[in-house]
Image 1: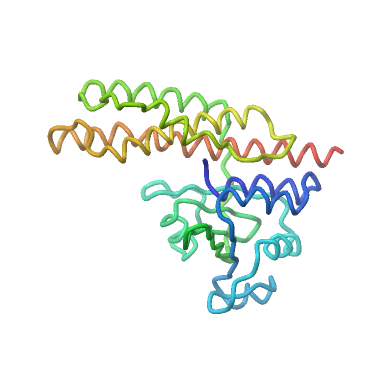
Image 2: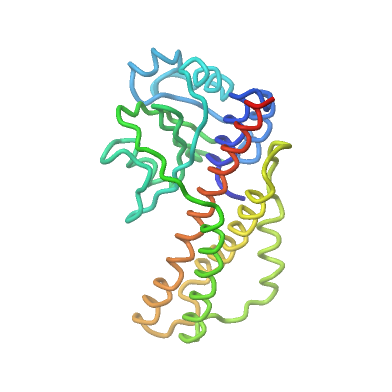
Length: 260
């Protein structure tokens, strides 16, 4: 329970450095869909990568791996944008707009990849050329982990004061069920990344339950707004933690592979 781009970035980065097999990448991606399709947004990039455009039959995910290696990609990163927080994007491009709409994207060298769930069990990856690739700002995983804890404490206090943090029958079981599948990761995946991803997944499950229970116990429009404001930092912290955990994992995995 995270996002397709996190799985793809970690496994593909490991594969590009010889720390995983291509089949490992494909198998891990099955967590998000039985079928993964690949298309390219523009004809020039499609020709350069030997991949189809959106008006042609899509390619398989294995073809995207081959194209990334041919393109010279060495490691990727995830982008988890929302309106108001578009860090890691390249301005007002089609890639940026689609990444914000989906809330999930990956960047490899000068290419942007957006995974979109287009049908039940089907994920379509659209590849975009990025003339300007925004630099990746360092996000220390320790700071991200602390931010998770701080955001949770702040949100819990605010919701309690608004009397909207109502008990929900079997809520612990619901959260456990949503985070039961942590997905498959490379054998050398750093334990700190795994721990932070797990914590982020647990908090994301709480956010999902809160959204389903909207507007909770809020009894006025102003209380509902305060409730949303209380949850927003938690959502921001979840995204930051996932970015930091993936960044750490990619760094450790690729460095470990290069030294062996």
